[in-house]
Image (cartoon, rainbow, N blue to C red; front, side, top):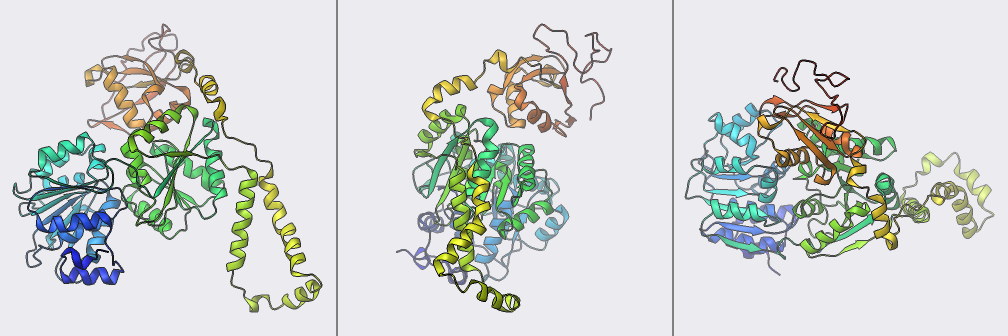
Length: 570
C-alpha cells in the first residue's frame, strides 16, 4: 500500500502526520498530492465530501512556503466560517514542525480588527470566506499581490451560495502567474465555467465516478403523509438509540422550529443556522462534537464545514432542490472511511424526486418502513441491556443495601432473576410503544393515494392566503424573477406559489396555505438593495376578481390615499 513517505512530502510534514496517527493516504490524497507537488499547471480535483480533500491540498501547500517572508503566499477560499476554522486548524497541525508558518482564518461573524492584526503580524496562508476577504481588500488590510497558490475549496458550494462575482473580484487581486487548485465534490456547469474562465492548462484528478454518491453511504427513504414527518423522525431516533445525526431542513425558521420541538419532547437536540452569532454556533458545535447532543438540526449553508467523523446518520427532513446539495448533505456521514446512512423522510409527491436523485447520482435508494412500536420497544430494551452490561458497579455506594438484596434474592436461579427483572424493568418501556399506529403510506396504492393527496391548483390557492410584498416592476421584477426570488429566500418549491399580481412598487402573490407562514417568516428582517422588505398577509384575493383589502386599502376596497410600499424606505 502507498504511504505518505512515497508521495514526496517534506520530512517535517511527515513527522507531523506520524504524530497525528496518519499512516496511509486516502485515494484522493494518493492521486492529488504527487501531482500538486510537481506540476506548474492549474489542477481540478473532484472527490466526494469526507474523503480527505483538506489534507490533499494542505500538505502540498506547505512545501514551498518561505517562513522568513511575512506576506501572504497562499490563499484558501471556502464557503463558510466553519469550514475556514476547520481548514486552518488542520493546516496548523500539519505545520507543527515548520517554525514561522502561520495560517490565519478570515470569516464573517468574528472581530474583523483582530483578523486584521493577525494578518499584519505575518501570515503566509490566509483561509477565508469570500465576503470577509473582500471587506479586508476594501480596507487595504490584506495584500494578495504575492500569492503563489489559490485553493478554491468546495467550489461548487461557493457558486451555489452566489459567490461568483466575489470570486472574480478576489482572483483579479492575485498575480496572473499563480497556480489555482480547484477542489469540488461535484462538477456542474458553473464549476466548469470557473475552471474555464480562471484556470489555465488545467489537469484533472477524479476519484470515483463524477457527480456520483459515495459508495460507503446507504441511501434510504421512508414515505409518510406530510403531517406525520415529525412523528416519523422521532420514531427513527427512538429505534436507533446509538444514532448520532445531522437533520437537514430548508430554512432557518424550520430548523429552529424543529429543534425546539425535539427539545420539548425530551431529545438532546439543538439548531445551527445563519441567524446564530459565532459564539452561539461555536457553543452548539462544541456540544455536538462532545456528543452532548444526539441531533444537530441544520440548514445546508450552516452545515458546510462540519467535520465530525462519527456521524451515523444524515436525515433529510426536507429533500434539497438540487442533486449537488444532496451530495454535500450526505457527505456529512461516512467520513474518514466509515459507513453511514442518508435517510430521507418524504411524502408521496417526493417519490419521483428520489427516482431523479437515483438516476443523477447513479446509486440506489432503499425503501424502509418507519419503525413500529415493537421495533422501537425491542431496540430500547437491547440498548438498556447493553448499558447494563457496561455499567461500573460502585460497591461502596451499594453497601447498605447489597446484603439485604443478596438475602432476599438468593432463592432464585439466574434465569428466574432475569425473567423477573425483565418483567419489572421493561414492562412499562415495552408498553409505551406497543400501541403506536402504523404511519407508513401504503406504497401499493401510491398512485391512487398521491392523486387523492394532491389537490388541484384551484383548491390549493382558494383560501385567500396571499402575500403582500413591497417590491414590484419598478424594482425590476416580473413574474419569473419574483418566483425565483420568493423560492430562493423561503426555500419552498415553485409549485407552492400561485398567481401573482405585479404592480410598480408592490405585488400580491398566492402562496399555498400550508406554507404561507414559512414564506412570511423567511422575509422578516430581509433587505433588498439596502431597503427593508415589508410583507403582510393581504385581506382579499387580488387578481382573482375580488375587491382588494390588503395593506394600503380600507376594508371596503377603497384606497386609503397611501400607495403600498411608498412609505419610508429603510
